[in-house]
Length: 23
Image 1 (spheres, rainbow, N blue to C red):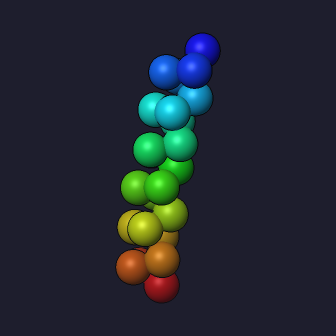
Image 2 (cartoon, rainbow, N blue to C red):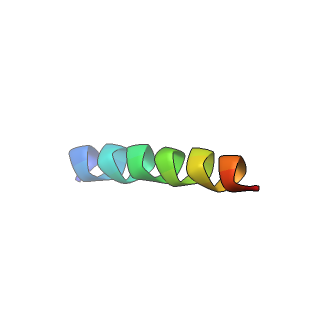
């Protein structure tokens, strides 16, 4: 569960950076 949460957090950060760069 903890590993999955950290993995989701990493993906979320990636999407966030891509989303911010896209804007």
